[in-house]
Image (cartoon, rainbow, N blue to C red; front, side, top):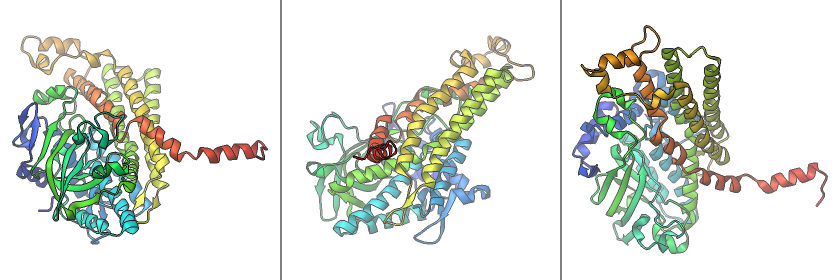
Length: 480
């Protein structure tokens, strides 16, 4: 079955019956569970927008393998233009969901693995790349949603994978058979895993020879025997079970429905194995995935920030502060920070280059700068949002109070803003601001695609400090 519409996507999730737990209990149908519905709706936008004529240019692409039009989230980038359209698409979907739509992770995993398997086969021989191509063709033809499996729990981070007291704290191969491999371990914080169809696993870091069993990349359906998911708790997640008003963004949720994704002796056939012991390429695969994923953040977070700015402007209209000079100044600063993020994603895309595989790759230094800016600017945008919205953001009563026969009239009376604007609409826009600038969203901005320290490590590697010292010395007239 090829997934085209939102309805197709939801039906595919209803049919797959994967093993997933929420709050200690198994979830039989994620499509009807309040905790999952907003994340499903957000991911569904990636299918819906590909069918809308006004988005066809950025939301679809022509497959380099078949020549057919496909959903861009299954595409292998073939040009700098593709890299730019990727960022444009992410911002556009951010405008529609103001949330994480989740398919970027698997998309970046496919592109990173495509480039790396080509280099592996060119060095060692073998058919990893051909297997990956066949896998991508299957994803393109079915339009299935892939989650990229990168982050392991890691245990004691002062020790390598093979030095851990518990070897399962990094995903590893426990058996090599004639027909495939058996893997064990877990991937943590897996955005979109709760409502994906497949997972494409990658190593989480560079590996040494003694970590050979941990240098593994492979793909498996999330319905495979031994795959277990545990849904991660989010800030204010119980609001999804009550009225829509308190949820803030009830249709599209908080962030990306992350899960702890566990593999208890999962069998993977060889045709779905793309790395198995090639430690020399583990670090390269991680670096490529990280660069592709960091490229995204000025797009998706730029789109969400646009909604935050709009919500703040409306809140100021509703409370009569929109003409204040300091409010105008703060909104302008929020717009400046947002466009700075977006320009970083566009820049690293425009400066991208063709790899030996034929796939295009963003400029890694600029991609890391983009993500590092997100870890600062989204927090500042959120701080400014809290400033202009006011203290009411943290003290509003329940929706049930607004609806109450006893005290509803009092909420209406004392939380009213400017004349002509309903108290309910004022609360709605403030709840949206609360949702978009709260704990879970900010933590994801900080640690999604790697923490700030990982970007600083890349600066040291990519910043060409020796070249800059030589330039300075030459201009200063130092001949040594």
